[in-house]
Amino acid sequence: MKIGTIELGERPVFLAPMEDVTDIGFRMLCKRFGAAMVYTEFVSAEALVRDVKSTVKKLVISDEERPVGIQIYGRDIEAMVEAAKIVEQAGPDLIDLNFGCPVKKVAGKGAGAGMLQNIPKMLEITQKVVDAVHVPVTAKTRLGWNHEQLVITTLAEQLQDCGIQALTIHGRTRSQMYTGEADWTLIGEVKKNPGIHIPIIGNGDIMSLDDADRAFDTYGVDAVMIGRATFGCPWIFSRQELSLDEKIDVLEEQLRINVERIDEYRGILHTRRHLAATPVFKGIPNFRETRIAMLRAEKKDDLLAILERCREQLR
Image (cartoon, rainbow, N blue to C red; front, side, top):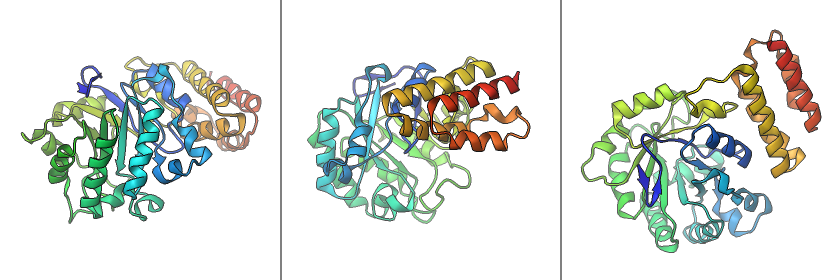
């Protein structure tokens, strides 16, 4: 499977772009364990154009994580085009357009999945971004705004006509947010459409590589993207089972990478989210107090000491 000239292998599995989750440390670990493509946290076009420092920092990528995509979102056409040009200078392998984020602060302002209520503007943004940059442009969206507006089969062709080189579809509507079950049937219909010639990437409720295999077999998608199930589990992309000791080693490495590449305070904040979600510590009795201490730790060495105590409790 290829996106433009990017060779991604057979039945590739991608790491979804997620705010406060897909920092550089996490991306590098997911890549090591087999993620065929990783994405940065999504980037606000307006903030990038205004040169907001925290947003600009999200553009930092490493050759070790390639191929890597940078995803942008926004509702203003000129800002999206300008942001795409800025992103291109950061050297990603592709630029992804976020037309799927359902959260109120994004979709409620007309960006992300909010674009599903203004398809002509979505298409204009897509066309102008494609025309403005030289790297492949892809898009990610949902089935529609709600179940009365399931537009994806038509929208996929329209986005393809704008020149995107791959489309990721999350099998929910915006109104569903992340509730209920993802509906892959429409994703499958898009893939089977003889008018679709670009790769179709399926997303939603993929909790393991077994789930990804079923999606490939049942719906014929070109790639599968995993989102929330990766929290605290960068090894989810590996077909080799890790021991608990090895998993704790990975979490400690993630902390060290984040502190080194971001800074101690924010590196710990990024790592905490994964520590709160990882299933690794489920075997520890009365874990609540340890979890609280873990989420309050402000120094790398303190957090590493807590992780080592957890390791001992699991032996």
